[in-house]
Image 1 (cartoon, one colour):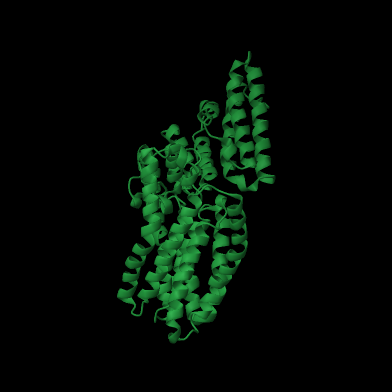
Image 2 (image 1 turned 90 degrees about the vertical axis):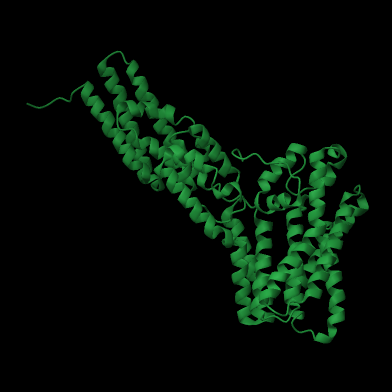
Length: 470
């Protein structure tokens, strides 16, 4: 974003943070290395071109460290936390599945780094069609039910099954996805949670815990997968609906309580509520301070949560007021703030709302004819294209009226100037009619339009007093 310049990636922890919280910053950084790179980190595309670049080499090391080390590390860390509170965690299944996933991921990553051939492309297409559907059916429907009806004496078979499935899923996620859909963040996240999920599913833990852990993991995975959907409502509906559908087989295997725990945990993690519950109040507090002290609004903007968490799913409702407060003292910084939120995947909705607040604030200051004349220049920087069509038309008309009021000063006689001002009164009445009958959602502009009409009418009367009957 414009207010933060990303540092160089030198360790896997920075890369991990950017993958899950700042993918846009990661995209800008890797594109500074080569313009064909993006946050998916398909490094094999440019390895021969920028392979000697120290930044690219550091990026490759961090990426490789995460793909090979994060699954087992996350399994040990998260599994340890789970086992502290819930006895019965199946460490053998957790570690074996994490190892299997790591091996499969390594094989898949090696396969992608090789020069493409026609046979590989054909295998990828057939594999994606066949294995993708088959394994999807096994993992989403058959496997959750089967794991709860198998007998303990089949543990050896399940161990082998766990390792093999971990390897196959690792290969499938990396190799058999179409290259245009390669998602290193999703591959990495699934590797980090597969061990914990298998340890809980295969362990002797209550069904409500199984539902909560599996639902929470899949919810976060869906958040990562759909987090790049720019249309907020579409992304949220797809994610929540998918969670309900996937919860059905778990409800059959776990019972009603387990199914409810699954849906609840899925929804909480998909919406990223654990971080949103403090990001929203903090954002509102910053916005309130900015409105109360506009001089510090630009300074406070750098602390808004959107600067360190670009994947916030739900709206930060105070952002439009903060941006409008910045506009009162520094239009240039306001443009930067608008660019910040416009670049985000889920907060772009506040751009037109902020511009409306800015336009209304400028209109409210127009209490004299001279201030009305300045409206066209004071709002010239506002990008009307970001407003809805009806609002674009209305604000453009008000700008034109302001300009014409200024031009009326060039009239040769007082009577001519009065006629020009009366023409602007008629234009204001047309705008008022437009708002009243054709754009009722813009009624917030009504008071300002009426004030303009009153101010211009008083100016006309001062130039050419109305005739009195006597």
